[in-house]
Image (cartoon, rainbow, N blue to C red):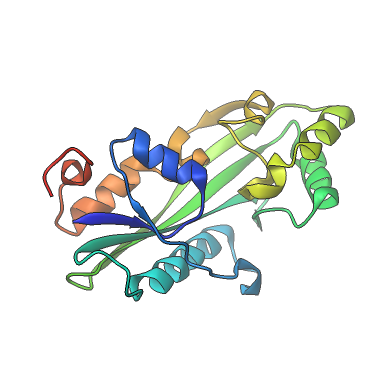
Length: 201
């Protein structure tokens, strides 16, 4: 059984590799902008399912695969924020986030191509943001990093110093909740350790 990651996120790939799993990466190509406004958890899970479904039918899949679709949004006062459209939006976002807390919600949708069975769930982690000055916000946005990630921040990159704390799973903030994914793998009848690149096939 081989894990297939239906995502272009380098952070998700690096997280899985550090956990001993070297997935096949097949980018879904799902246009996230086509999805209308929805509650944050619903949106994250719907996008994860769409990404998984788009890849699960591909001809280049390994013979037996677990296809993982993931999508993250920042829930700020019940509004879902994904990647900002441009620098101006990222600046506005950070002005509303600074000194406050939001919930990073990541939808996980896993499909076993051998059986057709699926399992899905949303992980939620509360993120506390520092009180940034306008100059710090402008400098951070100018790096381009906030434009490439959900919520316009990272916890494992240049944005790390601007996160004063988290309540919940750190890996979820990076992009994939390893404990949740382990549970989903188990619910489909597989051992997490069997996915290790050095483990049994």
